[in-house]
Length: 103
Image 1: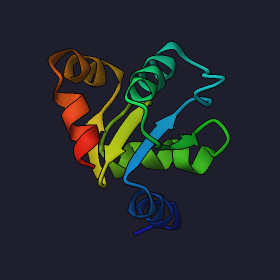
Image 2: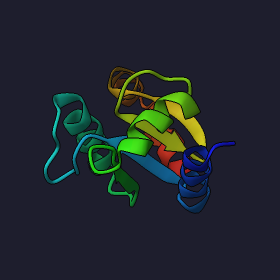
Image 3: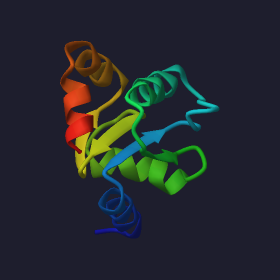
Image 4: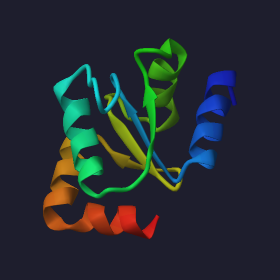
């Protein structure tokens, strides 16, 4: 495991809910990241945010870590849930709230 993969693994181990996004929930740097953080904020739960624009190594590394080419990426209990479109689908069916609350 590379150094960046270990760093990502440690972040995911230390945080039940982690959103890798461009920017922060207060200042998102892309519409997909804004949507993902808004969905999570609607549940009123705490989650870790990793701004991939501030961490170039993680920006590339997270794509390899989960074998997922786009950002944002949501992880719950070290499991990749998906990106913005998947989060929206799961939000609309109620599945995402259950996944978040069970974490």
